[in-house]
Image (cartoon, rainbow, N blue to C red; front, side, top):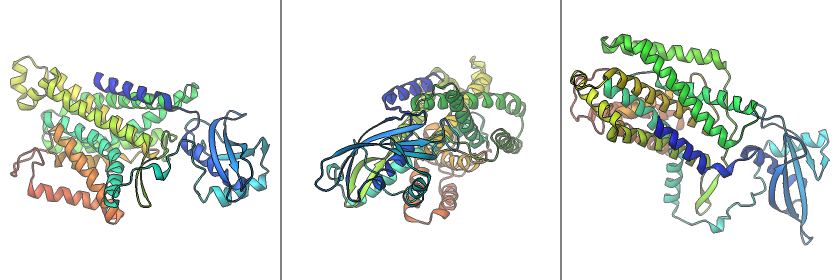
Length: 445
């Protein structure tokens, strides 16, 4: 767990100067209210934003220039419903311009005809002009955008597929509950951030650090309990019994999450999600968000850490020895039971981290959201040659890229069917995956 904790600290330090009281969605919504409060065609330049006269008020200072008149400095105060992770946190409930509150009728018209249409807001003070962006061919720009969009999915699939590979490499068994462990990590991250907010210590950086720490710890603890109370008693059972037991465990975890969080989605407020313009091709602009790039890099770094752990560490040598021949490894002093327990802890912690990435980037994960996620990660693990952690990573990248290409060129509602069909094709042509055996061999599940 030390490499993962070190990466988490480095990730937090890398973003340490980026925190703010209001998230980017709130800031963008407040900027959208500025153009209708000024003359049509006026040139608006955002100067800065700060905290308003009340705890939940955001103040944006800007300059407005209409026609040949001199630029005038103005400010707008946007009052939001609350703080923390409540569902109404980002709801705009009041606006004041230059210190004068807007009456109810005007505020209703502003929301109804301007804010609900989501028109383009006034630009940020540090936003990049399109003329300053590097211009690249349209095909390259489109491909780059799809690759950037696939990075978070690749990180999530890589973490989950590595979890499958860690356990299958040791036992030859597939644990069909890792998707639910990701959902468990998602809920744990929301609870951790909620506790941080209740202690008035919440910042975007501290929220991300606590979300990962709590999610990975909770998932690892539940994974250890699964190994101790479920899998250990089925060491001599055949593959079908273990498969059925883990399916039952997945159903039990899903119901456990439903009772814990209810049927409604629990979500985290968006942070660092203001798009960065990277390149352009005619009217097409390639964008990426800081949170998407950062969490994708963090997730892939965690996966790389698992690969390096298995390849170069003392535990990795013990893992490979037990994977090759457990009885012989035991004769040489390797504690096979401890190797199994640590593998489960590492695998479930990786699942918890995947759940946090899904929650932070996409807003949240429902209690039943882990099933499809885990199934796709299993496809990725099989593509890479299940039992190989590095192969699982390559399979995850392939699935993420395949989904991105399909989504950009084919009907979106048929994407999951295409992914599972790809699995069938690979099992027919190369049953061992990328790094497994090319020929069909008996496969214990």
